[in-house]
Image 1 (cartoon, one colour):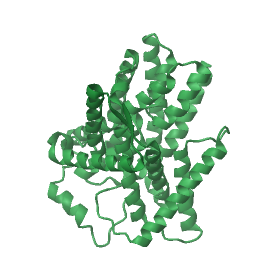
Image 2: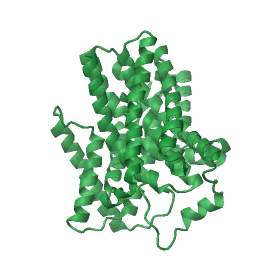
Image 3: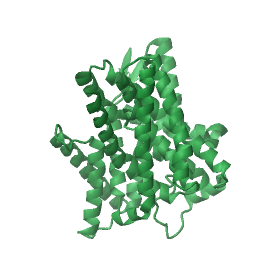
Image 4: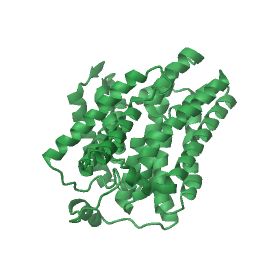
Length: 411
């Protein structure tokens, strides 16, 4: 028997998952030591409980996907609204170098997936599904390309395989990022963990001048905002989402067709910089940060709430092997390529954790990974300048180009 939760019940369930995750991370040393994000900790427990209920009594719950999508779009809009062109220059050459690392990994990811698929005797395009389509691309890209692969390339069940692979990536990306960064930080003595008192003092007693942070940096720190600021910021978010919905429909079937979340991010970038540069409007970054971080946590909680583990059990053996190899490849690449190329310092370790997040799952997972690390070891302004825009915008354009080239070759 299946129950359907509307938006209100879905929101209540997501909040419960977040509170559970916070409780678990605070009480279980393993989770805090290895910097597992709170939404991942609570969401995995909820997924296991859901599996037990389904196995024992046959009950399952379908949650509101529209609400989950809305929070995802708000998160990406917040990235765009935080993108002050003048501040982005702070990323400097590091942004370019990191983008080259990420672009190279997309090629490696597809090479691993398609090579293993051939060795295991299945269609190489199955390896592409278990490659950058779902792992770097996430659920949205998996849905878009799954239909194309089924209709135009005859890959039966491509959509279902894509959703399962993307879900696996979302989970594993949130699990390996924190421990990998912790290993690098400890091995090279890059930083020392903060005490609980230091963390609480930072969160509850901000400095009087309140220095501006990079987007999503220090999510638990107190932000002093007013009702007027909140209302103005909500209006900007609404404008970004309206623009994204319009452009998604308008560009459908054209050469400039892009996923809705990319339009939401792009709309935020344009709106922010037009208001600041032309109309001289002061944008209140603290309110954007509050709404963005809240949406990030709720999106991840809802994504894991919607996970049906019994469906993953139906994965074919070859797909399990490919996804396992992809996990190992991601960890090794982040440790030996991303970390070293970005400077072998504390910022590089945080960037490696972020790369694990969107290289296996999605940009929200990357941000959650970095937040878990910086909450324990201290801020990384550079990482929070580079990863959100790189992971949300540039990577999708590169990924789409690589996938198109591969499909043209195999066609």
